[in-house]
Image: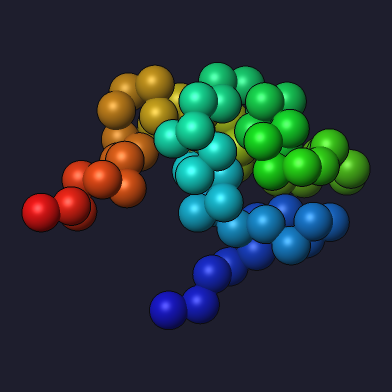
Length: 68
């Protein structure tokens, strides 16, 4: 499965931002910080905000949900 780039400036996908949320990011700045970069053109900011909101609502699942 290919990952669509949501942040073309840094070649980041939605999965990258979801992983940052699982690592504890609770703001756009924190997401980028955990991913080792800063927003450039800001085109992806609405997506990052929607991922953060989904995480707050419990929609972003932790990786260990698949552990058996």
